[in-house]
View 1 (cartoon, rainbow, N blue to C red):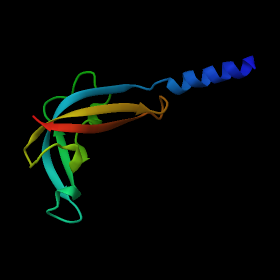
View 2 (view 1 turned 90 degrees about the vertical axis):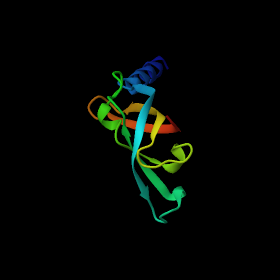
View 3 (view 1 turned 120 degrees about the horizontal axis):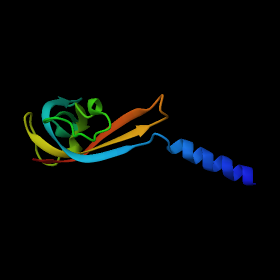
Amino acid sequence: MRKIGVVLVGCLVLAGCGASEWRQQVRYEVTKIFERPFPGNPENANVRLELVGDPPDDVLEPLTLTPAVVGYRTLRGDYEVGDRFLCWAEQKSEGHARTMTIRTDVSSCEKA
């Protein structure tokens, strides 16, 4: 029984190694609107966002922060190319040191 406990604790420690998270509000600009498959219907649009300025110093992976493509529901209110939004960006590392990938999610964007 004791061996099983040691093995379980070891697995939990290994599973948590290398996992990191980062979350911060960042400023994005709308650079492109992709309308699919019914043009003119904003409910079918995806929006490309580019980071305004430099990435924050403590970000896990700057290259996955921009550009971001999000659904229209991520942006609050009307939008057009050139509009700027303040969004929550969150990065999570997944996997072990050799195969670690960093995923970036952008959410809750409000006009800046």
